[in-house]
Length: 194
Image (cartoon, one colour):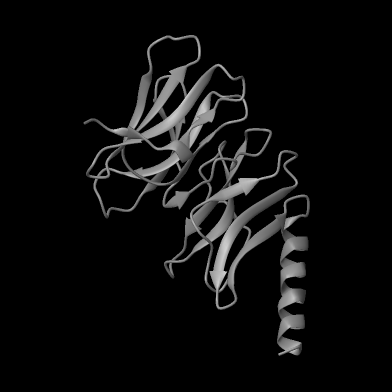
């Protein structure tokens, strides 16, 4: 019995010309595959232990996914060529969801692990190797999956806390300074109501 396809990982490239999916063996090792819709041979893009999801870029030429080479190792987010698996960029200890790319293709909303071990939403440029712009500072952090709205105006992640699981939204149309001021004002209001 060989590796099985993980149904939740199956997704079409934007042009509908191929499917991207993960297969997993009995020991948990996974393979990222691309299968052309025209019946041509499938292409193995990456092998490892994946964390989060794989995100296909808006033009279908790149895929972002986080994986490690051994179980228990820190997964590294990488951007790959969607046709042959060539590594194009390394983005460190971060994860993504299916819809993590900005519509322009020049950035990703990722969940980055900070020094405290918690993940926060961050906007990473795929055109530079800078650290990125932190979007949240949640006490308990966010989960591995991230999402960007189709128009690129909003980012979302999932946060868990004492009140349960909730979806966190970030208005990407605001500048960093506006988001920081809003967050600071919200924290002051919450403290005042405590």
